[in-house]
Image (cartoon, rainbow, N blue to C red; front, side, top):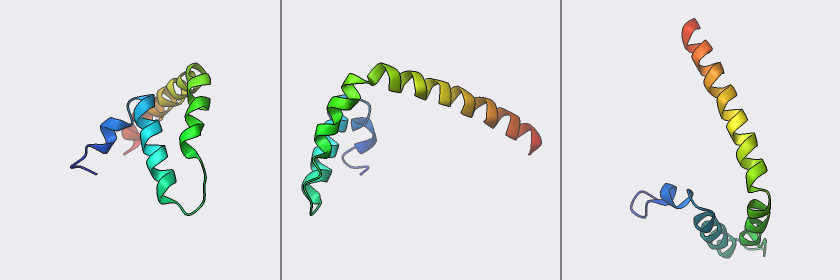
Length: 69
């Protein structure tokens, strides 16, 4: 994982597609995980908006939690 810098791969949609396709090849069933990237591309703006809102909530919660520790 570290040698091939996997986490950097997840920063692009193409990288996610490559990883999902590789994972699909390793499974016994034909899940076609790589094809799910079309949904990611089609709904990217929505996913980004939801993640941004979630992350801001997480930051707020973490800051409040640190005060109580």
